[in-house]
Every structure is written in C-alpha cells, then in structure tokens.
Amino acid sequence: QSALTQPASVSGSPGQSITISCTGTSSDVGGYNYVSWHQQHPGKVPQLMIYDVSYRPSGVSNRFSGSKSGNTASLTISGLQAEDEADYYCSSYTTRSTYVFGTGTKVTVL
Amino acid sequence: EVQLVESGGGLVQPGGSLRLSCGVSGFTSSRDAMSWVRQAPGKGLEWVSAISSGSGSSTYYADSVKGRFTISRDNSKNTLYLQMNSLRAEDTAVYYCANHRRWYFDLWGRGTLVTVSS
Image (cartoon, chains in turn red, blue):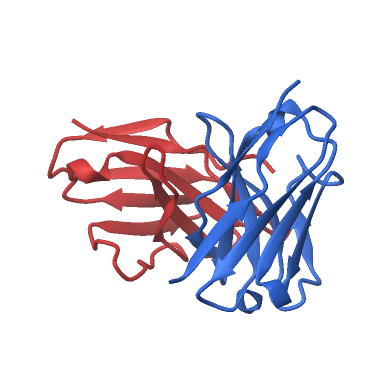
C-alpha cells in the first residue's frame, strides 16, 4: 500500500494555470475511475474538490478540473488565485477494496 | 446541519488502547460506508480503515494497522468507532472520520488528536 506519488510542491503566479500529477499503479489509479482530490488549508479539514477523476462537487469553482491517463491522474487549477494556496491530496480506490492517498502537494501562489 | 464529530482522542502510553467515536448528525449514517483517515503532525493523509454501509458487515484496514485496530458502527446511535490496541509512537496523529459517497470521501469531521508517548 504505497502512497501515490505527487510532486512535493508546485507554484504559479496569480492568473496562471498549474497542474499537479498523481502517479499510482494499475492496482489503484489505473484500475478504476475512482480518483478524487482534496484541498487542505493549514489547520483545516480536507475539502473534496474533484471526484471520479473529473467531476466537481456542487460549490467547487470550475477553475478546478481533473483528468487521468493510464496510471497518472492530474488536477489542474486555472486562473490561480491567492485562496488556492493550500496542500492538495489525490486518493484512489484500490483492487484490495482499500484506499490510498497521495504524498501531497503544496501549492504556492507567487 | 450535516456533520461528523470525533471524540475519544488523548495521550496514551505505547502498548496502550484507545477507542475513538464519530457521531453523525443531519443524516442517517447507515446509508453510506465510512472511513477513518489520519494525519501525523506535519505529514500527509493516510487512510486507516473503512466499514461498509448498512450493518457494516465488511471491514477493511491499511496494512499498518491490521490486527491492531477494529472499526465498527452502531447505527442505532448513528456512531462510528475505531478501537485502537497495541498503540505505537507512529500512530500519533489527528484521526478524521469521513463519510463515503460511492468511492470518495465527501464529508469529514474536524478530527481528534491521538498522542502515543511515555
């Protein structure tokens, strides 16, 4: 049950687009379209941003989008804003009927 | 208001036990599967355990806690539990309960801190 691999940090200027990758295996990310993304501000509870690879929950800005190719999922934030500065975690359902989170990515708005 | 509220955290010695509770309000907890997720200080999220909807007849565990932790639910009390035995220093973390909607976590509690130290 190794954690999914994410870059430790990604940064961008306001208004730019950034993409966070999440790499797993055929037993998790590549095996199902059950990848989700959570945003976590310091000291706060994780908040669901994307589910089932590319679906946004009600209330989440359309600046957030998700995709997947093979064993790698991606989260793109377009029109980067100061409030997007946070930690982001991907997660996936696995073939063992368990879940696995990514290592986490700190997004910095320059 | 729909919410999850964890309780039962605290300081425990290595080798000790603790039972966490997660009270559900605003909806019927038996409707969905539920999980425990933890986050060590300054670290990332780690899925710990899940229990199926309804009677909770199916349970699942991370390798790191298998054989030491037991998840259960009491639908009459709308409450989720995590019995933690043989605790280790590396179990120190904030423990969140999370409600599932299909295969993702759509609602999280605020968490309860468990500290394992002598």
